Length: 449
Image (cartoon, rainbow, N blue to C red):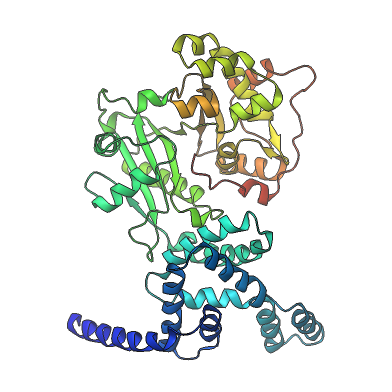
């Protein structure tokens, strides 16, 4: 079978090579039209490979022109939709409905599906969307194309296709290199640093992969097994620490969650990842009692400046010494608690990491001054970190309360801290605005969870 597969593969490659010569003289627009109208599988693959290869060799200006072509020529026809809709009003047959469906779908969606026939095309389309997102920032018309990409990617990358794999010190070097490159929360400084996060028995790392991109992690989480809930990332990542036997741990700490593919922005994997890892760890280590995060607050310092709050705390963060930060530790905890519970934007929590975990059903368990005294931690959150607790008995209720009423679940200790920081002129809202699904999804794919 292997020999036969090699022979067939060689014949196909030769046939493709011969066909590609004929396609070389065609413009990108002609190739796209040819792919959408092609009937044969072999000819379709030839067109698709020619388009992907041509795109890979393009400069910025030509790539932008390609997306303009998709926006202008491969858009929907509003008149055709209106006509098909009128037919469906009178005719409920499958044929009439199919006509409406076809009219409602822009040709560029079918183009993307046919491009995906080529082996390895999924990853190339994800990279293509990375360009599209960049171009859309100054060309709003291209946002229509991104809706098509998101629609397709939501199907192609749904949970049913994802594979959860442990990443450890024995994993292939090319995977380990990508873990180093994609780590977005606490930078991995060296191979020794990576080894400390993967090799000890009280450390775990899990990643989602897609069968079409087997060597590209989509998202990964780093886990520390501890006794009790830690209050600083310095302790978790300390070079000199005593390794704990896994069976002695009572807590699993998700201390870093990093999305890896910029072209999959808006396609959320984090919720499924955490739930799957909790389930797997619970089976492996049934004595674990608590599942918590040790998370940053990436917009805390910005919010303080915006609100004119915590001037002494922000000044201490700029100095960066333990003495200066300790002097502001209680103020830091109070302000952080108020920020997490009451700071809103468009009716949802101001903090993107909070939106993500609260929408998943976690609760704000505790806040820690001097939790992250790295340069990045001081700049973003004045050194404060937060524990989000995943209480398995309350996850569903917390999620429902947050999704339907915007209620932020928090421990009594955090609520008390928030009340202490409440300014007289800005009381904490007792009835938060309703949070729409779109608002809870926004920015959950940020790589700093």
